[in-house]
Image (cartoon, rainbow, N blue to C red; front, side, top):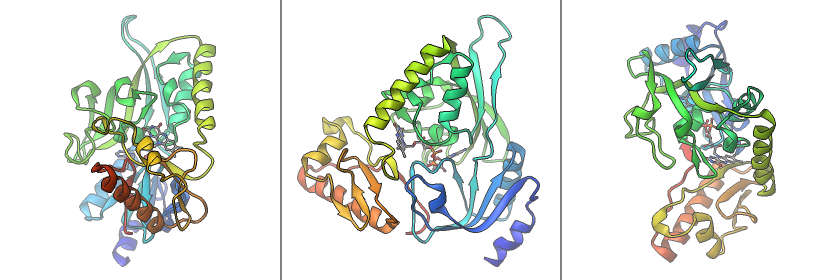
Length: 315
Ligand SMILES: Cc1cc2nc3c(=O)[nH]c(=O)nc-3n(C[C@H](O)[C@H](O)[C@H](O)COP(=O)(O)OP(=O)(O)OC[C@H]3O[C@@H](n4cnc5c(N)ncnc54)[C@H](O)[C@@H]3O)c2cc1C
């Protein structure tokens, strides 16, 4: 801890805010998670790059935090540093040089996806409506290749601005990378593994802002009706798999897992693939609940459920 304290002294606090022992439950939609040793919030993309360089030189492990909407952080927290991207939140409507060029909306990685959709709507730009209401940041949605209403975020990206593993900025066409169901090239084993997402530009089309707003409201209403925001959660717990022949939620449901509870971690009564924190649940409770569901499904069907939610830190 002393070493981290010394390293923190080298961070320019005009460029970044820092804190120690930051409770991660304040930064996850599950409202679960122990302390992060060092919590750094860069105020600009350049500061983000500087901090990454420093941590790499000093050999400090780090975790990049978006909206915390797809992670389960252990009760013992995260050793090393967490870099919170929430202040990297600029959005720009890029002007077309030629009439036939695509219309592009550029945004930094910390922009909440909800804000990005709202900005596109105000500019009369259509394409992102299906993502309205999904919690999390642009960076997290790209890392996860978020998918809403059978629409993958990757299909809307023109270019990615990244920091590669040599610490250099690069702009890459998204179409040159491999994307698949809930998989991005940034994940382990992908061609951009351990690269950092700084920003992206989205290819959109002009439409009437009123019509765009209607389509967005339709999606938000659907999420509210499905009770997505009733209790802290991280959305769907497990991925779907075509080989199972039916959605994972249905398999869990048929095995009577709705309402199964470990401590204050509960398989929701309204959707068996949504696991919720009904009040101060621990990461340990949630992990036990996940493992129990996996065991029941495996014993009954032979299927191995793959969590969509990522496990971060020490449990
Ligand atoms: C109520 C609810 C509903 C949801 N519905 C959906 C849904 O319909 N579809 C869906 O796909 N998901 C859904 N989710 C899950 C979640 O919203 C998405 O996965 C979202 O994209 C996660 O983004 P985030 O910023 O919160 O990522 P985080 O949880 O903060 O991080 C996820 C991963 O991304 C990495 N990461 C984040 N930013 C960067 C960056 N700049 N560079 C490199 N790596 C980065 C993190 O290190 C981590 O490995 C839902 C969640 C909730 C709570």
